[in-house]
Image (cartoon, rainbow, N blue to C red; front, side, top):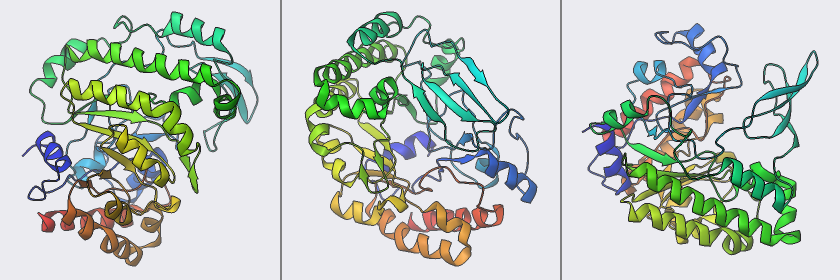
Length: 387
């Protein structure tokens, strides 16, 4: 059974099929540490990649422009991962990246999404956001007319014909959509978090317009893409929660976003895509019922230190597809902590199905190669035993 067949079986809660051996990804700093500690260096990492950047693991949809790990995958016998259909699902043309101001330890730049950012050199800390592409309806209408036309022109890579042919005989799951596409995540990138949250009250019609326009844009765009290549799953990116709860109330999610979720997921189902996974960090307990009502079938990565215990989630939502949920913090503590974390969650979750176990986000550089190998070897053994 290949990775595509296995993914589809697991998402259907087939417990006779072993689940996938996947990880979400790794900080580049972690990979550099691991090469020094014994990870065979067959592919390596680019010198230009910063320690604070990340390399995609098999559970995190990869496309050719994105850094991907192959060395950990091969060393620890992980399964082939998700590949994302490589269509640009936001601005075309993108904003011109430019440096606005430079200093010894920091600089200000405008990124490809039109966001003005103050960043420390070496990306050793989170950026400070200084400006956004949309502040009013005129900005939105101009941006939409210039950069959000649902045409494939300038949205497909040069290797698109190769990708289409290669996908016809694929052994991995193809995903459509994903970052930066979501009905909270994208408006936040347009207006900024504080401006967006205030606008739900001060300018609700603008937010409704943006959400509705984005939904129509994505449906029209993906309809054209799916005429050329099929997908096994769809992705929605939100990152709409923090450690103690959602960044937005369930009432506002239901009022503003739920209709768009229903419309977009209905389109995906009409195009034969049954599995729709949403990516959000943080404590999203209060939002899961709304996501399910909106047609979303699964979530990831279930951050443990944000109160997302996958065992409790499974008990509350028996048919929710779950990926992730293993505490990255325990991997740095040593073998006993790793054993406790795996024993507390993995047997129960595999018994009930619909689960792909992996760390609850990218593995950080405080985890040694010895500890990671121990964790992953134990987890692989549990996966094999359960099947």
